[in-house]
Structure formats: structure tokens, C-alpha cells
Length: 282
Image (cartoon, rainbow, N blue to C red; front, side, top):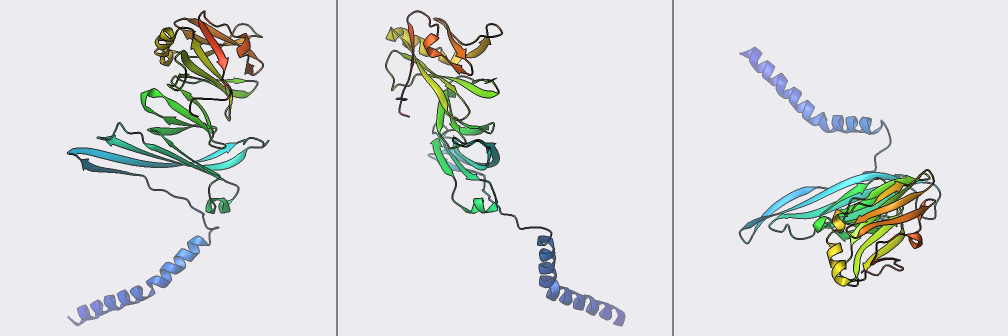
């Protein structure tokens, strides 16, 4: 019995000593771990999903945050610059699924930890149902009806809209994009589609395809989403951009790494004009 009391007293005393010295031990261990290297500068964000009842129906909201380091050349600079992008996409689900969500992009220079303690280089806030990085050069924002809007990651500039998959190819080691979008309501009744020829950072040509007959234009607008622009080699020296339409094939020749809209072959009853400046609410 006496041995049992002695053993219990020893356990109690050891526990009291451990409790009293725990902060010192913990602090020493933490300092030892931090002394392994410089402190980290961190940037965080919380993704979540929430639900509630609205007029007897369940509604949901999601907020997703992603970070991505980038390396790209900004306009006016010759060397790639390191950037950090923070992408936040807020969307609604279920009862509120018809509403557009919100896309927010914040971009910081990334030359050192001190950059993350400063305001972002720029902030982009646009409506959208989803968003994704398209390589290191563009942000793709999804809308209803299959439309996507593309923005340059160097400065957040809107580049073009597209209702079809992008035609992407390289010319003289320069990446090029061709986007085709149904003409917006703000454009004339004769407007069919807007074709954009772009680099990763800016639109090089924005072309408006129109029809002489407004009724024919309305019919053609309904076929734009099924059209696929294609860059095609005619022979070793000549390349054309082809757009197959129900009215016929439109061919725009290349000159070096650029296109020459003035020399385009257009189906009868259609016209192709360069838009300067862009006028459809952008």
C-alpha cells in the first residue's frame, strides 16, 4: 500500500514538473524549428461551400481561391517578369443557378517576399460562372451559352470573346490565337460575327463579318458556334486562315506572322471589315 502511494506521488510530481516546463519546452522547440531558415511570407485564402433555403428551395454558394506563379513579358519590357496571381471565383448553385457569379483576379510582382505585403499590381473583377488560367499568358472566364472572355495576365486587359474553341498555333516562335464570337446585339443587324487575331498580350486584328441581307445575317449568326477557324498551309511558303461558313469558305492570307484582311477571299454577299476602335460596349 505504501509502495502504491509512493508511486502515485511520483507520477503526480512528474506531471506538475512537465506542466510547469511545457511553455519553455514548446517555446524552445519552436525557436529551434524557426532557426532552420528565414521566416516565410504567406498569403492565404479560404475556399468554402454554403447552402441555405430560399422560398422553400435550397440555394448554394461556393467560393474557390487558387494561387499561381507566372512568368511573362509585360508590354514595354524585354525580359520575363515573375508574378503571383490570386484567382477567386464566386458562384451560386441550385435555386440561384441562373445568376452570373463573380471572378476576381489580383496580381502581384514577385521579386521578393516584400512584394506580397504591398497592394497588387492590378485587380480585375468581372462577372462569370467559372475561370481558369490558359497557360501563363491569359485568363479564360466562362459565361452562359458557352461564351468565354479572355484577359491578358500581364495587365488584365480584355483581349477577346469566343463562342468556339480557340485556334492556337505558333508562327516564327510566336504564339497566335484566333477567336470567333457571335455578333453582339449592340452591333448592326447585318453583323454576323467578330473574328479576333491575337497574340498572348493583345488583339492584333478585330474583324467584323457582315452580310448584305439582315435576314441572312441572322441565319448565319446561328451557325457561328459550330464554326472552327483553322490555320492551313497551302504550300511550303503560303499559309491561310480558313473559316468554313454555310455561305462558303472565307480565307485570309498570312504575311509573316500576321494576317492580311485586305486580301481575304470572302463568300459572295459577305464583307469583312476591321473594327477600329472596338464599339460593342467594350
